Image (tube, rainbow, N blue to C red):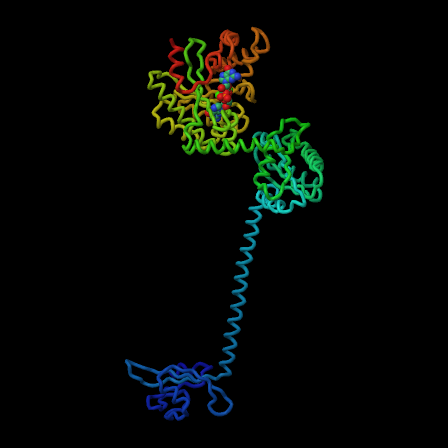
Amino acid sequence: MIGNLSFRSDIEHVSFIDPMLRVVASSEPGFLGMTIRNEYIKEHIADHEFHVVRMALGGEKETLFASLPVIYEDEFLGTLALGWDTKELDSEYRRIVLNALIQFVLLLLFMGGILYYAYKKNTANIKAAFYDETTGLPNRRYLVEYLEDAKRHPEYPSAIILIQLNNLKTLATTYGAKYANQVYAQIAHAIRSSLRAHESLFSYSDDRFVVIKDHYEQKEELATLSERIIATTKAPMSFAGDHHYLYAEIGIVEVKGERISVDTSLQQANLALSHRKGDPDAAVIFFKDEMEGILLRQRKIKRALRAIIAGKDSTSFSLHFQPKLNLLDGSIYGFEALARLRMEDLGPVSPLEFIDIAERELLIHDLSRHILRLACEFVRALHQAGHENQSVAVNISGIQLLRDDFVEDTKQIIESYGIPMRHFEFEITESVLLENYELINEKLARIKNLGIQISLDDFGTGFSSLSRLSELHIDTVKTDRYFTKNISGEDDDASILRDIISMAHKIGKTVVAEGVETDMQMRYLASHGCDIIQGYLFSKPLPQRDVLDFITKATR
Ligand code: C2E
Ligand code: CA
Ligand code: CA
Protein backbone atom coordinates (compact mmCIF):
# COMPACT_ATOMS: atom_id res chain seq x y z
CA MET A 1 0.00 0.00 0.00
CA ILE A 2 2.81 2.38 0.89
CA GLY A 3 4.38 1.59 -2.46
CA ASN A 4 1.17 2.40 -4.23
CA LEU A 5 0.62 5.65 -2.41
CA SER A 6 4.17 6.88 -2.77
CA PHE A 7 3.90 6.36 -6.47
CA ARG A 8 1.89 9.50 -6.71
CA SER A 9 4.10 12.39 -7.62
CA ASP A 10 2.49 14.87 -5.26
CA ILE A 11 3.11 12.69 -2.23
CA GLU A 12 6.45 13.28 -0.62
CA HIS A 13 6.48 10.34 1.69
CA VAL A 14 4.25 7.73 3.24
CA SER A 15 5.05 5.97 6.46
CA PHE A 16 3.41 3.62 8.88
CA ILE A 17 4.05 4.31 12.53
CA ASP A 18 3.32 1.63 15.08
CA PRO A 19 1.70 2.30 18.50
CA MET A 20 5.19 2.67 19.97
CA LEU A 21 5.82 5.54 17.55
CA ARG A 22 8.34 3.66 15.48
CA VAL A 23 8.32 3.92 11.71
CA VAL A 24 7.84 0.37 10.59
CA ALA A 25 7.35 1.03 6.92
CA SER A 26 8.15 4.07 4.80
CA SER A 27 8.63 5.19 1.26
CA GLU A 28 11.63 7.09 2.59
CA PRO A 29 14.31 4.54 3.44
CA GLY A 30 15.92 7.05 5.83
CA PHE A 31 12.80 7.11 8.03
CA LEU A 32 12.61 3.36 8.52
CA GLY A 33 13.16 2.29 12.15
CA MET A 34 13.04 5.90 13.32
CA THR A 35 11.08 6.71 16.47
CA ILE A 36 8.98 9.87 16.26
CA ARG A 37 10.27 12.50 18.60
CA ASN A 38 8.64 15.61 17.27
CA GLU A 39 6.20 16.62 20.02
CA TYR A 40 3.83 18.17 17.57
CA ILE A 41 3.50 14.96 15.56
CA LYS A 42 3.35 12.85 18.68
CA GLU A 43 0.46 14.89 19.92
CA HIS A 44 -1.41 14.34 16.70
CA ILE A 45 -0.86 10.61 16.68
CA ALA A 46 -1.71 10.14 20.31
CA ASP A 47 -5.40 10.96 20.17
CA HIS A 48 -6.07 8.34 17.45
CA GLU A 49 -7.91 10.86 15.34
CA PHE A 50 -7.45 11.93 11.77
CA HIS A 51 -5.46 15.15 11.42
CA VAL A 52 -4.09 17.26 8.63
CA VAL A 53 -1.60 19.98 9.48
CA ARG A 54 0.71 22.22 7.55
CA MET A 55 4.16 22.41 9.03
CA ALA A 56 7.73 23.21 8.32
CA LEU A 57 9.79 20.23 9.19
CA GLY A 58 13.14 21.93 9.30
CA GLY A 59 14.15 24.73 6.96
CA GLU A 60 11.85 26.67 4.65
CA LYS A 61 10.08 23.77 3.10
CA GLU A 62 6.53 23.30 4.13
CA THR A 63 4.86 19.96 4.24
CA LEU A 64 1.28 19.05 4.64
CA PHE A 65 1.23 16.27 7.15
CA ALA A 66 -1.71 13.93 7.48
CA SER A 67 -2.05 11.29 10.15
CA LEU A 68 -4.61 8.55 9.85
CA PRO A 69 -5.11 6.08 12.73
CA VAL A 70 -5.50 2.47 11.61
CA ILE A 71 -7.87 0.55 13.83
CA TYR A 72 -8.86 -3.04 13.35
CA GLU A 73 -11.52 -4.63 15.57
CA ASP A 74 -11.15 -1.94 18.21
CA GLU A 75 -7.42 -2.40 18.35
CA PHE A 76 -5.18 0.49 17.42
CA LEU A 77 -2.60 -0.87 15.01
CA GLY A 78 -0.73 2.27 14.23
CA THR A 79 -0.79 5.46 12.19
CA LEU A 80 -0.49 6.04 8.50
CA ALA A 81 1.40 9.27 7.96
CA LEU A 82 1.51 11.10 4.66
CA GLY A 83 3.44 14.12 3.67
CA TRP A 84 2.61 16.32 0.65
CA ASP A 85 4.81 18.87 -0.93
CA THR A 86 2.81 22.09 -0.42
CA LYS A 87 4.14 23.59 -3.66
CA GLU A 88 2.56 20.82 -5.61
CA LEU A 89 -0.37 21.01 -3.33
CA ASP A 90 -0.84 24.74 -3.88
CA SER A 91 -0.85 24.28 -7.61
CA GLU A 92 -3.41 21.51 -7.09
CA TYR A 93 -5.36 23.91 -4.94
CA ARG A 94 -5.21 26.52 -7.69
CA ARG A 95 -6.33 23.89 -10.17
CA ILE A 96 -9.32 23.10 -7.97
CA VAL A 97 -10.15 26.76 -7.57
CA LEU A 98 -9.78 27.27 -11.31
CA ASN A 99 -11.97 24.27 -12.00
CA ALA A 100 -14.56 25.56 -9.61
CA LEU A 101 -14.39 28.93 -11.29
CA ILE A 102 -14.90 27.41 -14.73
CA GLN A 103 -17.76 25.36 -13.44
CA PHE A 104 -19.24 28.43 -11.83
CA VAL A 105 -19.01 30.32 -15.13
CA LEU A 106 -20.56 27.37 -16.97
CA LEU A 107 -23.31 27.26 -14.40
CA LEU A 108 -23.89 30.97 -14.85
CA LEU A 109 -24.09 30.52 -18.61
CA PHE A 110 -26.50 27.64 -18.17
CA MET A 111 -28.68 29.55 -15.74
CA GLY A 112 -28.48 32.58 -17.97
CA GLY A 113 -29.59 30.40 -20.88
CA ILE A 114 -32.56 29.22 -18.92
CA LEU A 115 -33.40 32.75 -17.91
CA TYR A 116 -33.03 33.96 -21.48
CA TYR A 117 -35.20 31.12 -22.75
CA ALA A 118 -37.80 31.91 -20.12
CA TYR A 119 -37.61 35.55 -21.11
CA LYS A 120 -38.06 34.71 -24.79
CA LYS A 121 -40.90 32.39 -24.03
CA ASN A 122 -42.45 35.02 -21.86
CA THR A 123 -42.24 37.65 -24.55
CA ALA A 124 -43.82 35.15 -26.96
CA ASN A 125 -46.55 34.57 -24.40
CA ILE A 126 -46.99 38.27 -23.91
CA LYS A 127 -47.21 38.66 -27.66
CA ALA A 128 -49.81 35.93 -27.92
CA ALA A 129 -51.74 37.40 -25.02
CA PHE A 130 -51.73 41.03 -26.06
CA TYR A 131 -51.51 40.99 -29.84
CA ASP A 132 -53.75 39.73 -32.58
CA GLU A 133 -52.21 36.99 -34.69
CA THR A 134 -53.76 37.97 -38.01
CA THR A 135 -52.86 41.64 -37.96
CA GLY A 136 -50.14 41.98 -35.35
CA LEU A 137 -52.30 44.71 -33.81
CA PRO A 138 -52.68 45.03 -30.05
CA ASN A 139 -55.77 43.05 -29.11
CA ARG A 140 -58.81 43.49 -26.93
CA ARG A 141 -56.93 42.63 -23.75
CA TYR A 142 -54.35 45.24 -24.52
CA LEU A 143 -57.16 47.67 -25.27
CA VAL A 144 -58.70 47.09 -21.85
CA GLU A 145 -55.41 47.79 -20.10
CA TYR A 146 -54.85 50.83 -22.27
CA LEU A 147 -58.26 52.17 -21.36
CA GLU A 148 -57.73 51.43 -17.67
CA ASP A 149 -54.75 53.68 -17.91
CA ALA A 150 -56.55 56.36 -19.92
CA LYS A 151 -59.32 56.46 -17.33
CA ARG A 152 -56.83 57.65 -14.75
CA HIS A 153 -56.14 60.78 -16.77
CA PRO A 154 -59.47 62.49 -17.29
CA GLU A 155 -57.55 65.70 -18.01
CA TYR A 156 -56.60 64.19 -21.40
CA PRO A 157 -59.92 62.92 -22.77
CA SER A 158 -60.03 59.64 -24.70
CA ALA A 159 -62.75 58.22 -26.91
CA ILE A 160 -63.50 54.70 -28.09
CA ILE A 161 -64.28 54.43 -31.78
CA LEU A 162 -65.68 50.98 -32.43
CA ILE A 163 -65.56 50.01 -36.10
CA GLN A 164 -67.73 47.24 -37.45
CA LEU A 165 -67.00 45.82 -40.92
CA ASN A 166 -70.44 44.88 -41.99
CA ASN A 167 -70.19 42.36 -44.76
CA LEU A 168 -67.05 40.57 -43.67
CA LYS A 169 -69.01 37.67 -42.18
CA THR A 170 -70.77 37.15 -45.50
CA LEU A 171 -67.41 37.17 -47.27
CA ALA A 172 -66.19 34.57 -44.78
CA THR A 173 -69.07 32.25 -45.56
CA THR A 174 -68.72 32.74 -49.29
CA TYR A 175 -64.95 32.59 -49.67
CA GLY A 176 -63.81 31.06 -46.40
CA ALA A 177 -62.41 32.39 -43.13
CA LYS A 178 -58.89 32.57 -44.52
CA TYR A 179 -59.91 35.09 -47.14
CA ALA A 180 -61.91 37.07 -44.61
CA ASN A 181 -58.86 37.20 -42.35
CA GLN A 182 -56.79 38.47 -45.25
CA VAL A 183 -59.29 41.22 -45.91
CA TYR A 184 -59.38 42.05 -42.21
CA ALA A 185 -55.59 42.38 -42.14
CA GLN A 186 -55.68 44.51 -45.29
CA ILE A 187 -58.21 46.86 -43.75
CA ALA A 188 -56.19 46.97 -40.53
CA HIS A 189 -53.25 48.13 -42.56
CA ALA A 190 -55.30 50.75 -44.38
CA ILE A 191 -56.77 52.15 -41.18
CA ARG A 192 -53.44 52.20 -39.43
CA SER A 193 -51.81 54.16 -42.22
CA SER A 194 -54.58 56.73 -42.03
CA LEU A 195 -54.12 57.40 -38.32
CA ARG A 196 -52.35 60.42 -36.87
CA ALA A 197 -50.86 61.37 -33.51
CA HIS A 198 -52.85 60.25 -30.45
CA GLU A 199 -54.83 57.71 -32.48
CA SER A 200 -54.21 54.02 -31.79
CA LEU A 201 -55.66 51.01 -33.53
CA PHE A 202 -56.66 47.77 -31.79
CA SER A 203 -58.09 44.54 -33.09
CA TYR A 204 -61.41 43.90 -31.32
CA SER A 205 -62.96 40.80 -32.91
CA ASP A 206 -63.12 38.97 -36.25
CA ASP A 207 -64.83 41.89 -37.92
CA ARG A 208 -64.31 44.79 -35.55
CA PHE A 209 -61.59 47.27 -34.72
CA VAL A 210 -61.24 49.93 -32.09
CA VAL A 211 -59.45 53.22 -32.55
CA ILE A 212 -58.68 55.14 -29.39
CA LYS A 213 -58.44 58.86 -29.85
CA ASP A 214 -56.54 60.54 -27.03
CA HIS A 215 -56.07 64.24 -26.25
CA TYR A 216 -58.90 65.58 -28.38
CA GLU A 217 -60.71 68.81 -27.68
CA GLN A 218 -64.02 68.66 -29.45
CA LYS A 219 -66.49 65.97 -30.33
CA GLU A 220 -66.32 67.06 -33.97
CA GLU A 221 -62.78 65.72 -34.12
CA LEU A 222 -64.17 62.27 -33.39
CA ALA A 223 -66.73 62.55 -36.14
CA THR A 224 -64.08 63.69 -38.62
CA LEU A 225 -61.77 60.86 -37.65
CA SER A 226 -64.65 58.39 -38.08
CA GLU A 227 -65.43 59.69 -41.56
CA ARG A 228 -61.75 59.31 -42.43
CA ILE A 229 -61.78 55.70 -41.20
CA ILE A 230 -64.94 54.88 -43.14
CA ALA A 231 -63.37 56.32 -46.28
CA THR A 232 -60.31 54.07 -45.94
CA THR A 233 -62.44 50.95 -45.55
CA LYS A 234 -64.34 51.76 -48.72
CA ALA A 235 -61.62 50.75 -51.19
CA PRO A 236 -62.80 47.70 -53.16
CA MET A 237 -61.27 44.33 -52.41
CA SER A 238 -60.92 41.92 -55.25
CA PHE A 239 -61.03 38.21 -54.91
CA ALA A 240 -61.61 35.40 -57.40
CA GLY A 241 -62.33 37.99 -60.08
CA ASP A 242 -65.05 39.64 -58.01
CA HIS A 243 -64.87 43.08 -56.47
CA HIS A 244 -66.16 43.42 -52.96
CA TYR A 245 -67.08 46.59 -51.20
CA LEU A 246 -66.97 46.52 -47.47
CA TYR A 247 -68.81 49.09 -45.51
CA ALA A 248 -68.01 50.09 -42.01
CA GLU A 249 -70.19 51.47 -39.27
CA ILE A 250 -68.93 53.18 -36.17
CA GLY A 251 -70.09 53.53 -32.60
CA ILE A 252 -68.38 56.18 -30.48
CA VAL A 253 -68.23 56.61 -26.74
CA GLU A 254 -66.16 59.02 -24.72
CA VAL A 255 -64.20 57.55 -21.84
CA LYS A 256 -65.31 59.29 -18.69
CA GLY A 257 -63.15 59.12 -15.60
CA GLU A 258 -62.80 56.33 -13.09
CA ARG A 259 -66.45 56.08 -12.21
CA ILE A 260 -67.39 54.14 -15.33
CA SER A 261 -65.65 50.80 -15.85
CA VAL A 262 -63.83 50.01 -19.06
CA ASP A 263 -66.21 47.14 -19.54
CA THR A 264 -69.18 49.48 -19.42
CA SER A 265 -67.53 51.93 -21.81
CA LEU A 266 -66.97 49.14 -24.33
CA GLN A 267 -70.53 47.95 -23.88
CA GLN A 268 -71.72 51.48 -24.51
CA ALA A 269 -69.76 51.60 -27.77
CA ASN A 270 -71.35 48.30 -28.76
CA LEU A 271 -74.72 49.61 -27.74
CA ALA A 272 -74.27 52.70 -29.92
CA LEU A 273 -73.39 50.38 -32.82
CA SER A 274 -76.46 48.31 -32.25
CA HIS A 275 -78.55 51.45 -32.77
CA ARG A 276 -77.39 51.84 -36.33
CA LYS A 277 -80.08 51.76 -38.93
CA GLY A 278 -78.11 50.35 -41.86
CA ASP A 279 -78.21 53.83 -43.39
CA PRO A 280 -74.90 54.51 -45.16
CA ASP A 281 -75.39 58.24 -44.63
CA ALA A 282 -75.62 57.78 -40.89
CA ALA A 283 -72.89 55.24 -40.31
CA VAL A 284 -71.42 57.01 -37.27
CA ILE A 285 -73.34 56.92 -34.02
CA PHE A 286 -72.42 58.49 -30.72
CA PHE A 287 -73.42 56.75 -27.53
CA LYS A 288 -76.21 58.59 -25.73
CA ASP A 289 -77.34 58.16 -22.15
CA GLU A 290 -80.80 57.04 -23.31
CA MET A 291 -79.09 53.98 -24.73
CA GLU A 292 -77.99 53.18 -21.20
CA GLY A 293 -81.59 52.38 -20.35
CA ILE A 294 -81.52 49.65 -22.96
CA LEU A 295 -78.30 48.27 -21.55
CA LEU A 296 -79.83 48.17 -18.11
CA ARG A 297 -82.89 46.42 -19.50
CA GLN A 298 -80.73 43.87 -21.30
CA ARG A 299 -78.84 43.16 -18.09
CA LYS A 300 -82.09 42.60 -16.24
CA ILE A 301 -83.32 40.23 -18.92
CA LYS A 302 -80.02 38.38 -18.91
CA ARG A 303 -80.23 37.96 -15.15
CA ALA A 304 -83.81 36.71 -15.43
CA LEU A 305 -82.84 34.17 -18.09
CA ARG A 306 -80.00 32.91 -15.89
CA ALA A 307 -82.39 32.39 -13.01
CA ILE A 308 -84.89 30.60 -15.25
CA ILE A 309 -82.20 28.28 -16.60
CA ALA A 310 -80.94 27.58 -13.09
CA GLY A 311 -84.47 26.61 -12.05
CA LYS A 312 -84.64 29.48 -9.55
CA ASP A 313 -87.57 31.16 -11.30
CA SER A 314 -90.46 29.05 -12.49
CA THR A 315 -93.07 31.79 -12.90
CA SER A 316 -91.63 34.38 -15.32
CA PHE A 317 -91.11 32.03 -18.21
CA SER A 318 -93.59 29.85 -20.07
CA LEU A 319 -94.57 28.62 -23.49
CA HIS A 320 -97.70 29.66 -25.28
CA PHE A 321 -99.08 27.46 -28.02
CA GLN A 322 -100.60 28.64 -31.26
CA PRO A 323 -102.71 26.09 -33.14
CA LYS A 324 -102.43 25.61 -36.88
CA LEU A 325 -105.47 24.89 -39.00
CA ASN A 326 -105.41 22.22 -41.67
CA LEU A 327 -107.31 23.80 -44.56
CA LEU A 328 -107.98 20.46 -46.24
CA ASP A 329 -110.12 18.97 -43.49
CA GLY A 330 -110.52 21.70 -40.88
CA SER A 331 -108.59 19.78 -38.22
CA ILE A 332 -105.96 21.14 -35.86
CA TYR A 333 -102.55 20.55 -37.37
CA GLY A 334 -100.42 20.78 -34.25
CA PHE A 335 -99.27 23.76 -32.21
CA GLU A 336 -96.33 26.12 -32.42
CA ALA A 337 -94.59 26.70 -29.10
CA LEU A 338 -93.82 30.37 -28.57
CA ALA A 339 -91.65 31.43 -25.67
CA ARG A 340 -93.04 34.00 -23.24
CA LEU A 341 -91.21 36.03 -20.64
CA ARG A 342 -93.04 38.27 -18.25
CA MET A 343 -90.92 40.18 -15.78
CA GLU A 344 -92.14 41.89 -12.68
CA ASP A 345 -90.65 45.29 -13.47
CA LEU A 346 -90.52 45.13 -17.27
CA GLY A 347 -93.80 43.39 -18.03
CA PRO A 348 -93.95 41.10 -21.07
CA VAL A 349 -90.70 40.89 -23.03
CA SER A 350 -90.84 39.87 -26.69
CA PRO A 351 -89.12 36.60 -27.60
CA LEU A 352 -87.40 38.51 -30.40
CA GLU A 353 -85.67 40.54 -27.70
CA PHE A 354 -84.82 37.88 -25.15
CA ILE A 355 -83.85 35.19 -27.66
CA ASP A 356 -81.43 37.68 -29.14
CA ILE A 357 -79.99 38.39 -25.70
CA ALA A 358 -79.78 34.66 -24.93
CA GLU A 359 -77.87 34.16 -28.16
CA ARG A 360 -75.44 36.96 -27.47
CA GLU A 361 -74.89 35.94 -23.86
CA LEU A 362 -74.38 32.28 -24.77
CA LEU A 363 -77.43 31.25 -22.80
CA ILE A 364 -79.37 30.01 -25.80
CA HIS A 365 -78.38 26.35 -25.47
CA ASP A 366 -79.53 26.05 -21.91
CA LEU A 367 -82.62 28.11 -22.53
CA SER A 368 -83.52 26.03 -25.58
CA ARG A 369 -83.15 22.81 -23.61
CA HIS A 370 -85.54 24.27 -21.08
CA ILE A 371 -87.95 25.18 -23.90
CA LEU A 372 -87.73 21.71 -25.42
CA ARG A 373 -88.53 20.13 -22.04
CA LEU A 374 -91.57 22.39 -21.62
CA ALA A 375 -92.69 21.43 -25.13
CA CYS A 376 -92.30 17.76 -24.23
CA GLU A 377 -94.42 18.29 -21.12
CA PHE A 378 -97.06 19.95 -23.30
CA VAL A 379 -97.22 17.06 -25.79
CA ARG A 380 -97.30 14.54 -22.99
CA ALA A 381 -100.21 16.37 -21.36
CA LEU A 382 -102.18 16.45 -24.65
CA HIS A 383 -101.51 12.76 -25.30
CA GLN A 384 -102.55 11.86 -21.76
CA ALA A 385 -105.77 13.82 -22.33
CA GLY A 386 -106.53 11.59 -25.30
CA HIS A 387 -105.28 13.79 -28.15
CA GLU A 388 -102.64 11.34 -29.27
CA ASN A 389 -102.23 12.77 -32.75
CA GLN A 390 -101.24 16.25 -31.56
CA SER A 391 -97.74 17.57 -32.21
CA VAL A 392 -95.68 20.59 -31.30
CA ALA A 393 -93.42 22.82 -33.39
CA VAL A 394 -90.44 24.34 -31.61
CA ASN A 395 -88.45 27.31 -32.91
CA ILE A 396 -84.75 26.55 -33.17
CA SER A 397 -82.13 29.27 -33.25
CA GLY A 398 -79.38 29.02 -35.84
CA ILE A 399 -76.73 29.02 -33.14
CA GLN A 400 -78.24 25.85 -31.71
CA LEU A 401 -77.99 24.08 -35.04
CA LEU A 402 -74.31 24.87 -35.30
CA ARG A 403 -73.58 23.22 -32.02
CA ASP A 404 -71.98 19.77 -32.37
CA ASP A 405 -74.03 18.02 -29.73
CA PHE A 406 -77.37 19.51 -30.76
CA VAL A 407 -78.81 16.42 -32.44
CA GLU A 408 -77.71 14.03 -29.70
CA ASP A 409 -78.92 16.40 -27.01
CA THR A 410 -82.33 16.79 -28.61
CA LYS A 411 -82.72 13.07 -29.04
CA GLN A 412 -81.91 12.44 -25.39
CA ILE A 413 -84.36 15.01 -24.08
CA ILE A 414 -87.28 13.81 -26.22
CA GLU A 415 -86.53 10.16 -25.50
CA SER A 416 -86.49 10.85 -21.78
CA TYR A 417 -90.19 11.78 -22.11
CA GLY A 418 -90.93 8.65 -24.11
CA ILE A 419 -92.69 10.61 -26.86
CA PRO A 420 -92.31 9.42 -30.48
CA MET A 421 -90.17 11.82 -32.54
CA ARG A 422 -92.88 12.27 -35.16
CA HIS A 423 -94.80 14.51 -32.75
CA PHE A 424 -92.09 17.13 -33.01
CA GLU A 425 -91.33 19.70 -35.63
CA PHE A 426 -88.41 22.13 -35.67
CA GLU A 427 -88.84 25.56 -37.21
CA ILE A 428 -85.65 27.08 -38.51
CA THR A 429 -85.35 30.50 -40.14
CA GLU A 430 -83.84 30.70 -43.56
CA SER A 431 -81.34 33.35 -42.46
CA VAL A 432 -79.33 30.64 -40.69
CA LEU A 433 -78.83 28.97 -44.05
CA LEU A 434 -77.01 31.97 -45.42
CA GLU A 435 -74.01 31.09 -43.36
CA ASN A 436 -72.85 27.48 -43.26
CA TYR A 437 -75.40 26.25 -45.78
CA GLU A 438 -73.85 22.80 -46.27
CA LEU A 439 -73.24 22.21 -42.60
CA ILE A 440 -76.75 23.22 -41.63
CA ASN A 441 -78.33 21.14 -44.35
CA GLU A 442 -76.38 18.12 -43.19
CA LYS A 443 -77.60 18.74 -39.62
CA LEU A 444 -81.15 18.97 -40.93
CA ALA A 445 -80.75 15.57 -42.59
CA ARG A 446 -79.70 14.09 -39.26
CA ILE A 447 -82.67 15.65 -37.47
CA LYS A 448 -85.02 14.37 -40.14
CA ASN A 449 -83.48 10.93 -39.75
CA LEU A 450 -84.52 10.97 -36.11
CA GLY A 451 -88.10 11.36 -37.34
CA ILE A 452 -88.52 15.04 -36.47
CA GLN A 453 -90.24 17.21 -39.09
CA ILE A 454 -88.52 20.36 -40.26
CA SER A 455 -90.07 23.54 -41.49
CA LEU A 456 -88.43 26.59 -42.98
CA ASP A 457 -89.75 29.64 -41.13
CA ASP A 458 -90.26 33.17 -42.44
CA PHE A 459 -89.82 31.96 -45.97
CA GLY A 460 -89.43 34.66 -48.59
CA THR A 461 -87.78 37.24 -46.34
CA GLY A 462 -84.34 35.74 -46.47
CA PHE A 463 -81.99 34.54 -49.07
CA SER A 464 -82.88 31.01 -50.07
CA SER A 465 -84.45 30.79 -53.47
CA LEU A 466 -87.12 28.35 -54.50
CA SER A 467 -84.56 26.64 -56.70
CA ARG A 468 -82.42 25.84 -53.68
CA LEU A 469 -85.41 24.66 -51.70
CA SER A 470 -85.45 21.24 -53.36
CA GLU A 471 -82.05 20.27 -52.02
CA LEU A 472 -82.89 21.30 -48.46
CA HIS A 473 -83.83 18.61 -45.97
CA ILE A 474 -87.13 20.17 -44.97
CA ASP A 475 -90.78 19.07 -45.03
CA THR A 476 -92.59 22.37 -44.80
CA VAL A 477 -92.31 25.95 -45.95
CA LYS A 478 -93.80 28.64 -43.71
CA THR A 479 -94.43 31.74 -45.76
CA ASP A 480 -93.70 34.95 -43.91
CA ARG A 481 -96.47 37.07 -42.41
CA TYR A 482 -95.51 39.85 -44.80
CA PHE A 483 -97.01 37.98 -47.78
CA THR A 484 -100.26 37.27 -45.98
CA LYS A 485 -100.59 40.93 -45.04
CA ASN A 486 -100.35 41.89 -48.69
CA ILE A 487 -103.38 39.84 -49.63
CA SER A 488 -106.11 42.42 -50.09
CA GLY A 489 -107.99 41.33 -53.19
CA GLU A 490 -108.22 38.28 -55.35
CA ASP A 491 -105.64 39.26 -57.93
CA ASP A 492 -102.96 41.71 -56.81
CA ASP A 493 -99.32 41.61 -55.84
CA ALA A 494 -100.00 38.87 -53.32
CA SER A 495 -99.74 36.65 -56.39
CA ILE A 496 -96.23 35.89 -55.21
CA LEU A 497 -97.81 33.82 -52.44
CA ARG A 498 -99.74 31.83 -55.04
CA ASP A 499 -96.46 31.18 -56.89
CA ILE A 500 -94.65 30.11 -53.74
CA ILE A 501 -97.45 27.64 -52.95
CA SER A 502 -97.43 26.05 -56.37
CA MET A 503 -93.62 25.88 -56.60
CA ALA A 504 -93.33 24.39 -53.10
CA HIS A 505 -95.93 21.78 -53.99
CA LYS A 506 -94.00 20.87 -57.15
CA ILE A 507 -91.00 19.87 -55.04
CA GLY A 508 -93.17 18.08 -52.54
CA LYS A 509 -93.21 20.53 -49.63
CA THR A 510 -96.18 21.34 -47.43
CA VAL A 511 -97.06 25.06 -47.20
CA VAL A 512 -98.07 26.86 -44.02
CA ALA A 513 -99.16 30.50 -44.29
CA GLU A 514 -98.45 32.61 -41.22
CA GLY A 515 -100.22 35.64 -39.85
CA VAL A 516 -103.66 34.92 -41.21
CA GLU A 517 -105.97 37.46 -39.60
CA THR A 518 -108.94 37.79 -41.94
CA ASP A 519 -111.49 35.60 -43.65
CA MET A 520 -110.50 37.05 -46.96
CA GLN A 521 -106.86 36.00 -46.47
CA MET A 522 -107.99 32.52 -45.55
CA ARG A 523 -110.20 32.23 -48.63
CA TYR A 524 -107.38 33.39 -50.89
CA LEU A 525 -105.00 30.86 -49.40
CA ALA A 526 -107.54 28.04 -49.55
CA SER A 527 -108.32 28.80 -53.18
CA HIS A 528 -104.63 28.60 -54.09
CA GLY A 529 -104.11 25.28 -52.41
CA CYS A 530 -102.28 26.38 -49.24
CA ASP A 531 -102.22 23.38 -46.88
CA ILE A 532 -102.19 24.94 -43.45
CA ILE A 533 -102.79 28.37 -41.95
CA GLN A 534 -101.73 29.91 -38.67
CA GLY A 535 -102.80 33.24 -37.27
CA TYR A 536 -105.07 35.27 -35.06
CA LEU A 537 -108.06 34.33 -37.21
CA PHE A 538 -107.91 30.74 -35.99
CA SER A 539 -106.36 31.50 -32.61
CA LYS A 540 -103.85 33.62 -30.79
CA PRO A 541 -101.04 31.77 -29.00
CA LEU A 542 -102.63 30.22 -25.88
CA PRO A 543 -101.33 29.46 -22.44
CA GLN A 544 -101.11 25.70 -21.91
CA ARG A 545 -104.10 25.62 -19.53
CA ASP A 546 -106.39 26.96 -22.31
CA VAL A 547 -105.27 24.52 -24.98
CA LEU A 548 -107.44 21.56 -23.96
CA ASP A 549 -110.53 23.80 -23.96
CA PHE A 550 -109.59 25.08 -27.38
CA ILE A 551 -109.22 21.57 -28.80
CA THR A 552 -112.59 20.55 -27.38
CA LYS A 553 -114.34 23.59 -28.88
CA ALA A 554 -112.55 23.35 -32.23
CA THR A 555 -113.38 19.70 -32.76
CA ARG A 556 -117.03 19.96 -31.73
P1 C2E B 1 -92.15 33.28 -35.53
O1 C2E B 1 -91.56 31.93 -35.37
O2 C2E B 1 -92.35 33.78 -36.92
O3 C2E B 1 -93.48 33.28 -34.71
C1 C2E B 1 -94.67 33.82 -35.16
C2 C2E B 1 -94.87 35.12 -34.52
O4 C2E B 1 -96.05 35.72 -35.09
C3 C2E B 1 -95.19 35.01 -33.04
O5 C2E B 1 -94.69 36.17 -32.43
C4 C2E B 1 -96.71 35.01 -33.00
O6 C2E B 1 -97.23 35.40 -31.78
C5 C2E B 1 -97.01 35.99 -34.10
N1 C2E B 1 -98.32 35.80 -34.71
C6 C2E B 1 -99.01 34.65 -34.81
N2 C2E B 1 -100.15 34.83 -35.50
C7 C2E B 1 -100.19 36.15 -35.85
C8 C2E B 1 -101.11 36.97 -36.59
O7 C2E B 1 -102.16 36.53 -37.08
N3 C2E B 1 -100.81 38.27 -36.74
C9 C2E B 1 -99.68 38.80 -36.23
N4 C2E B 1 -99.45 40.09 -36.42
N5 C2E B 1 -98.76 38.07 -35.54
C10 C2E B 1 -99.04 36.76 -35.36
P2 C2E B 1 -93.87 36.05 -31.13
O8 C2E B 1 -94.46 35.03 -30.25
O9 C2E B 1 -93.68 37.43 -30.64
O10 C2E B 1 -92.51 35.45 -31.63
C11 C2E B 1 -91.67 36.21 -32.38
C12 C2E B 1 -90.50 35.40 -32.82
O11 C2E B 1 -89.70 35.00 -31.72
C13 C2E B 1 -90.89 34.10 -33.47
O12 C2E B 1 -91.24 34.36 -34.77
C14 C2E B 1 -89.63 33.30 -33.33
O13 C2E B 1 -88.73 33.63 -34.36
C15 C2E B 1 -89.08 33.79 -32.00
N6 C2E B 1 -89.37 32.81 -30.98
C16 C2E B 1 -90.51 32.66 -30.26
N7 C2E B 1 -90.38 31.63 -29.43
C17 C2E B 1 -89.17 31.08 -29.62
C18 C2E B 1 -88.46 29.98 -29.06
O14 C2E B 1 -88.96 29.23 -28.23
N8 C2E B 1 -87.20 29.74 -29.52
C19 C2E B 1 -86.63 30.51 -30.49
N9 C2E B 1 -85.39 30.21 -30.87
N10 C2E B 1 -87.27 31.55 -31.03
C20 C2E B 1 -88.53 31.85 -30.61
CA1 CA C 1 -91.84 30.03 -35.95
CA1 CA D 1 -92.43 32.93 -38.84
